[in-house]
Every structure is written in structure tokens, then in C-alpha cells.
Image (cartoon, rainbow, N blue to C red; front, side, top):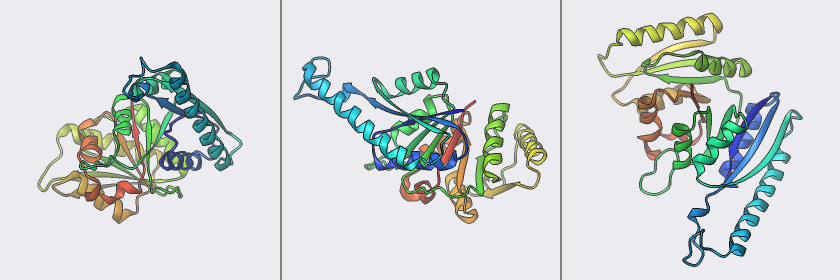
Length: 282
């Protein structure tokens, strides 16, 4: 039985994310924990802080949030058609990341699923601050689902990498499970600058990954090198040319991850609006 944590703000993006997860995990017994975190410190009650706000006002805020969570649960239950899926609403108060970490540990969460449409405003980064914080600060595999993502058969999965990390058993196990469950093809993609040569360490990591995939998924993987001065542009080109259905990345490779997810702008990379990405933690 897998345990899935779905943080929700009751938005369409959150509902789309859990809808995607229900399809992805079809035929897999799962507990879905629908978590709403109320950061009461962010509320202002006619100029008063949460600590000094009248008890009745605070109670009204909590009651309202719990009602919205119940409505969200009913929507999810109507979507869910797999009898092996069970849903549990959770209301919590406190700092967002602290609450996420606690529930991940207490409920032995295997996967966090979050909806994302990118931050608004002038920055326009491809993912919002909550999703970014979960990916970098919570040690749990996280699936980020863009607002326009619609689940279909995961035929093509891309694994962008610079080969700078060793692929541990936990990383390879998560990849294997994904490929086996969906009968997918893994496309390992390396973005390289013109004239750039892999170091001895990078070559060893690449060879290890090749040996593993060729032995485990003999005819269902391929390795590619895209030459481009910009990593994100290389990924964009690869995703569009191959009709990639899902991106898989490793949290340990933070510098590479930041180039693709955190240092990029929405207007420059269209694939982030429709292609989900799974970040694997060790």
C-alpha cells in the first residue's frame, strides 16, 4: 500500500494534480492524504495578529477551511474509480514546510503530489514557492503537475542529467518502478556545450546507468546528447521533439535541477505548462 500526500489549497490546480495522480497510480493500492495547511500567522484580523485575534474569529477561519477541505474530498472521491484508493482529509496549522515534513514522517509518505502553475508577477518562474520549497527542503519524492497537464499513457519519459552524480539504489528503484508500472521508454538526455568532454567521473556514472538500464530494460531505453549553450533550451528542444510525457530528475543534483526549474522563466520554456516532473530523493 502506497501512501500519497497531496497538499491542497482547494484550487483547480490542486484538483488537477490529484486527478493526474489517480490515473498514474491506477491499479496500485494507495492511501491519499489530502492535506490543507492553514498558516494562521499570515492572517490579519482588522490589524490584529493571529496570537491576539479574538478566539471566535480564529474559530471561524478554522471551520471555514475544514468545510472547504470536506468539499474538496467529495470532488476527489467522485473522480476516483479505483477501489484500491482510499482518501483521508487532514487539516493542520503551522508553517507549511514544517507541517509537510511532519506528515511525511508520521504517515510514511512515499510520494508528494502538488499542482503548480508557476509564480505570478514579474519573476514568472516555472514553479511556485511552495512547490520549490517542498522539492528542495523535504526529503520525499515529489510529483509536480502543471495546470495544463492531462494524464495519458506515459510512453516517453525523459531523464535529463549531467552525469555528475552516482545513481544510488533508491534512485534506480524509483525509476524502475515507474518504467515497469507504465511500460514506458526511458530517454536519458545529456545537455552538452560545444566541445565539452565528459570527465572520468561522469563517464563512469554514465556507464553505470547504461549497464543498469540495458540489463533491466534492454529495448526500452536510449541515451542522447543535445548540444546547446543553455541547459533549459536543450531540455525544451528534447521534450518537444520526442513528445515527452514526464520528466524525471534527481534532487541530489541540485545545481542541475536549479538550472531547469528555478532559474528559468515561464515565457521561455513552454513545456513546463503541460509536462509533469518527478523529483527523486535519496
